[in-house]
Length: 175
View 1 (cartoon, one colour):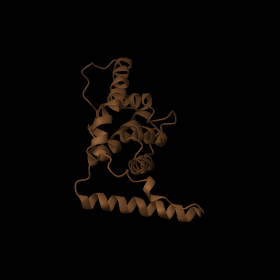
View 2 (cartoon, rainbow, N blue to C red):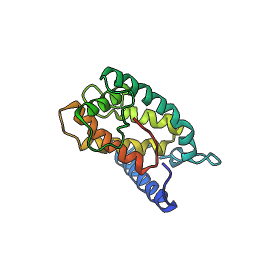
View 3 (cartoon, rainbow, N blue to C red):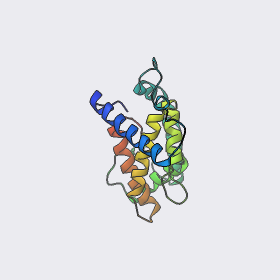
View 4 (cartoon, rainbow, N blue to C red):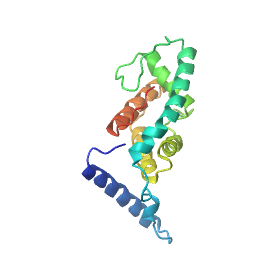
């Protein structure tokens, strides 16, 4: 999630803060909005360093789910990673469905589980509120654009959207 330029980071932060302030004002809450809760504490390490340190835990979870799904679907053990594959076979799309469901990113109704996205983001970023808000927003955007009824196709479309988001934010995760 390392921004390419300081301007990009400031622009993203400005947009997120504006949305959060609007949401706070629209809901008419009487408690003061505390922006400091969203920002890392002074002296903490950069978010990309935290991600680099914590991402292997999530990768282990994904890899274990992937191996179980490869065995379940009787695919070759050396099955290619599908995170960036744009034109997978139907069986590969079903592999993505199996993995996303095993790690609970896709629910039984074939919807993206935004709560699980937030949970995994929290784990990787050590509860960075800004990162959680951004990942939640991205997950919701991915969900809105998908209308297929075929669970394997839905998983493929989620995979494509998630892959773009991970790549844009320099997060290296493979499934």
